Amino acid sequence: MKIKYCIPIIIIFVLFFSCNQKYSKEQERHIEIYKQLTKYDFPSNSLIMDSYFVKYLDHTYYMIIKTNETYINKILKADPPFSDKWIEGPVPEEFQYGMYFGKNKNISSYGKGKAYGDDELIKLTNSKYIFYSTHGSMLEEPYKLNIFIIDKNDNTIYIGSYSM
Image (cartoon, rainbow, N blue to C red; front, side, top):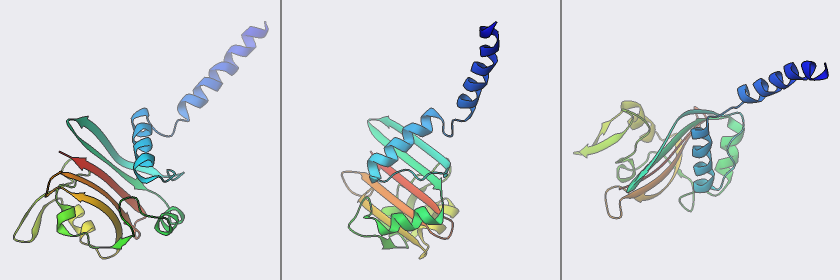
């Protein structure tokens, strides 16, 4: 008889913990990459807007995180992940080229000083109200770019790591 009463409790327990998972296994892997690249803790109560990772000869990794003002301010007081200091925007063209933050959300080329690609991403990287940290370039060998962008107005973080 006691087993009969335990089964519903076990079912409720399993359902609670399986439904309470905040991030998918793939997102958990992307969070680990974020921690490795930045040495920062991942912001609690944050929303992963988009993320991607593929490794085949080269790699592409990006994550867009909607977080809170407290975390943004904490990060801006910490050492940046890819440079000596935080730099206020806009992001120079040599770092914009090759950025990829999702399907149709990229900056693929420049012509006569004008970026071609996603209008939102171009607007973001050309804003003087962002902070960024970067290392490398997709314009010269070795083709590798790491970039971390903070949009303080929107409490959004963009992190990307690309190589080819």
